[in-house]
Amino acid sequence: MKNLAPQLRIPGFTLVALFLILSHTSSAQEVEGEATPTVVAPDWMVMVSPTMGLLRNATTFPVPVGRDGNDELVFENYEMTDTGWGGGVTVMGFYKRVALTNVFFGFPQVSHAKLLGSITYLSVAIPTSVFVEPYLGAGLALVSTDVDILDFNDTRIDDLGGMTMRGHAHMSWISVDNTVVAPFPKVGAKFKIPIQHWYATPFYSYMYEYVKTRARSNGGTVELWQCADQDDPSCPEITGDFPMDTVEVRAFDKTTEKNYHSHLVGADFFIDFHYFLQMRGKVYYNTNHDLWTVRLIGSMLFNENFGITAYFEYSQKITVTNTYFLLGPAFVFSPSEFRDSIREMKNRRKKGD
Image (tube, rainbow, N blue to C red):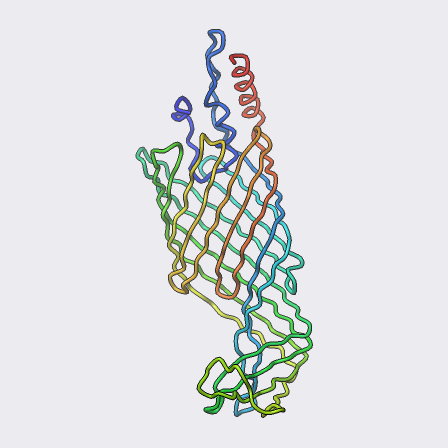
């Protein structure tokens, strides 16, 4: 690749596909005294990767557990975890030093939940003549989770009026709609590592999150039982054959809207083996809410038009935590002149073998 380096001005965060395609040229030799043709990086390229895989979703939402002295419902947070199959489409492209990535995903049946979302990110690199390059970026994350539960049951232990009580909540139906809208600008610096084509990019990002949660139910009951051992907070046993009180929960429709502001610090990284096999990743920490996100993408191309991509992500959000694993083919689109030059380079290399 050294013979190409002076001509390639592609930023380090551009397509996996471009790097893999150019790797085919690294071992080309002069054939029968003819000079190897020069391969110039294209001005644009797009890679589309439809994927299928597994999602594990944990959603936090408010559930009524009783009433206060003013006969108003008292809500506590409840977490539901489900696993299901789904898919999505990843589109990555660049034009010169500007790169755009969009990930769309949908999981129609994750036990009780349906999940739909997208992440869009636009970035630009600032060229320099040294080993570090600054870059700027801006992104938007949209995630919608729709949960419908039949025969909902939950058990909580709490202190009510100085007495340790165990509460059993039951509702025949409860629906929760959760929407997250999160724009995030980003600044960072890419440091080139003198191993193959590796680099690391520490960054800072500010994230604003608008979270809307709507919980609905046709009502139910909350039974309150006295704990046998008032000194044991785990309440292993209860007393009595009947609950001390039964609270009737009327039908409710509760919507909460909250705005969150977060500072994120983290790093992107890229490691490879002659561009043929690659691993790129992102790790960042939400300093305001003690949340982590880890994202890994492994890629390999078989030729200038086709390859395979594997995607893993563990993402903690304020009301939703998702774990993804997706796998699928990758289709590459580029200018015809660039594809022709790659084929010519490969043919000359074969003749020289």
